[in-house]
Amino acid sequence: MGFLIRILVSALAAMLTTYLLKPAVKIDSFMTALILALVLALLNALVKPLLIILTLPVTIVTLGLFLFVINALIILLAAKLISGFKVDGFWWAMLFSIVMTIINSVMLSIAGGSND
Image 1 (tube, rainbow, N blue to C red):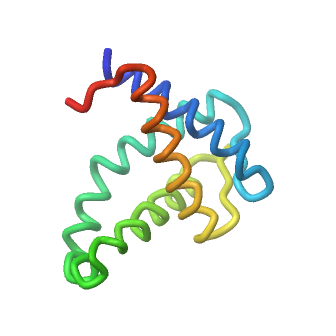
Image 2: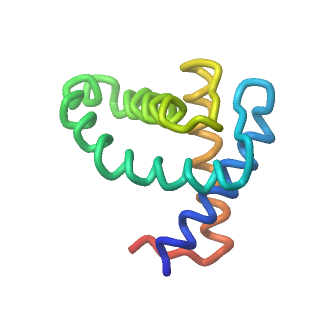
């Protein structure tokens, strides 16, 4: 049940983030936001660990700031995979990632989501 709540909260966070970054980021509907949340969960579980391992030296040299680049690349990959989700460029993807993470964290703390 916790996974479903996290997906719903992530979809709501994606919709709110899209509203804040309206000219550059577009999501067609709430169903697209749900699909985006699922795809991001899968990409974060499967692709992100591989990218972190492959870029470990760069991540260490930049003191972890390269993880922002990895997050932006995952957002861009999700935009390629989902037809109703559009991001105008790399910097917008990075901003989308940061804003969505903040909104998602706030909403999960309000909803009482656990980190297990």
